[in-house]
Image (cartoon, rainbow over all chains, first blue to last red):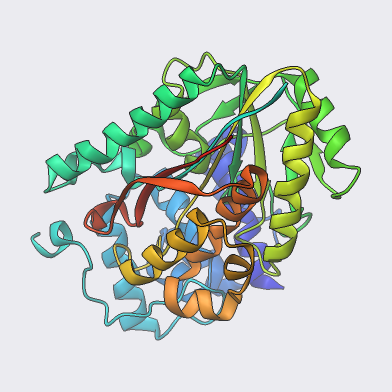
Length: 111
Length: 274
């Protein structure tokens, strides 16, 4: 149930300008509207893309959240890789990493 | 009046948002030119409105109330929900046509249990195609979503049935209607595997699609698709629906797997309506 709540938090945040404003001024209050675990609360407070990815947040929701945070594309991909290295494989959902963690884009590999 | 145009194209946020990171700019521009070719085909068809059959990404629908199909019924919509600078598309209102939507929905409901929505926020799944196909946003849009994101997903045979119903609906109204299906083909979007593309799978799917081989299209299982074409491959549903609406074979204008920074197999195709 908790992953559902975590994803719903991000779903609301991604699409609702009112929630985005609340996120900026009172994140704790916004999170209080959802039944989140302590691990999820820490991940959201820190904008921890890697942990959120490992927890199983749908990639499309996570990608839009990363864009909201202003995270650059290749940095976003690297943060997911780092999350797997630190926390292990994706625990839920259908957005697991299937490759070795290497870049599939020429541009990414050249950085 | 009738369905006057049916086509399909890939969507992905990188197509507009990461255009400046592309190494092979000639190939990128050829892709863009084929989007423009589709735009001209739609203009030449005389379409009064465009139905965009899409696979949205949690812009409007979540697992608290996830419809298998939803059709927009507004006089306008807004998008993108994404950061405009990230997507490379400015936020704007997009014209709809509530009356036309309503007539289409009423006909659809005779055979398919569609949801409808008077509010709808577009994400890249619709905004990226519109950016190329109606750059002046002067053609009313009727958005359609098929659930390709929140399992259990809409079964492929139901996507086909929806497409057939959409054809009947288009043929029942006075306006000339263009239908464009947009989704991924193979891709592993928004994961560390972003940029991974299964070209063989894509070409085989496009072959089945453009031969309009119903049985071959409906043979996929989600398990096979996930293994061979990634979670992005679930977005073949809009393509299949438009094939059913068209009821004819089609022509591939463009395909490449060589723009991985866009993180999707890039295709543009049309069906050869009689």
